[in-house]
Length: 148
Image (tube, rainbow, N blue to C red; front, side, top):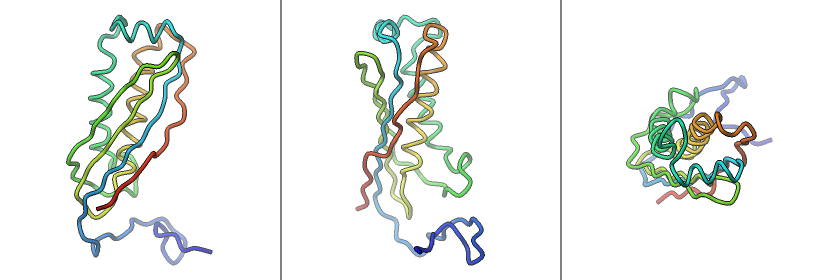
């Protein structure tokens, strides 16, 4: 059986030592969706929801969350993020969320990209729940990671 880097010799959780690794450019892209009613998509498109500008708030929330992953997920390293990009695309009955995180560090930024998508989705959900009780957050996943 493969040895897991997050377990010590006794099988207990530990933070992985990345001190020996050289800093490298690392990029991760994650995506997710908020499925909702077409009327909610229309309200998002028209920027006509009771809680205000949903996508601006969701973008700021996503960036803030990416910057604090080490505080949310116990074994994650603190990373100096170079950039976090968040994009929203309105589809017929869902919002497509894409987050791209960049760093030059000793470990990857997958968790930052995934957390950004998750918090963006939760923010959209929170800001739209008054008009749509059927929303579903779905398919949050890592799309790609690059190390140069």
